[in-house]
Image 1 (cartoon, rainbow, N blue to C red):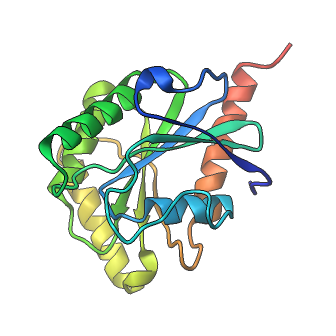
Image 2 (cartoon, rainbow, N blue to C red; image 1 turned 180 degrees about the vertical axis):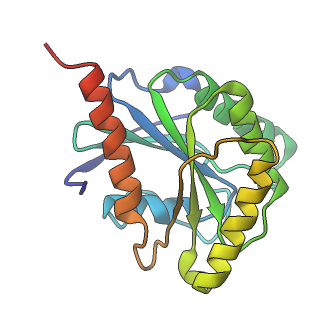
Length: 205
C-alpha cells in the first residue's frame, strides 16, 4: 500500500472530543522521544504532517489524520516523560488510557520501542496493560539505522524473550528506520491487510 492523501482532521484533549467516524483507526504510541512523529511522517510520505521536536513529550493531544479517505492514523501523546509536572502526567495518563481502552473505532495500536535499548520496564508494563484490557496491538521498533544489524536483532530477541515470560503468542513486530525508510512497506501492508479483512467481513451494500 502507498499513501496518496493524508490530511489533518482534529486534535482532541479528551475522549469526548474525538471525531465521530466509521473509519478504522490505527494509533501510534510510545515512550517520549522514541521517534513517533518522524515515523508517522515517514509512513505517510509527508515531511511535516506530525510535528517533530528535539524535546521529548511535545505531543499533548490526540491528533487525527485521515488517510486516503479510508482510515484514520492517530498520533497519541508519549508516555513516561518524567520532567513534566505530576498534574500534567496524570492528565496525559487519562487521555491515553481513555482513548486506548475505550475508543471503539481503534483497530490496532502500534507501540513504538527504541531498538537501541535493552527492554525497558515502562514499555513492558504498558504492553502488559494492553493484554489485560484485550487491546489489539503490534510493536514497531524504531531507529534501526542507529545500530548494526546484529545489534538490532539481538535487542529484538531480548524483547521477545521478556514478552514470552507472560505471553504465549507474540504480537506482530516490525523493525523500522525513519531515516532509511526501512520497514515502511511492511507496516503499511499490515494495515492494508487488516483493512481488506474488515471490508470483506463488512461489505458495503
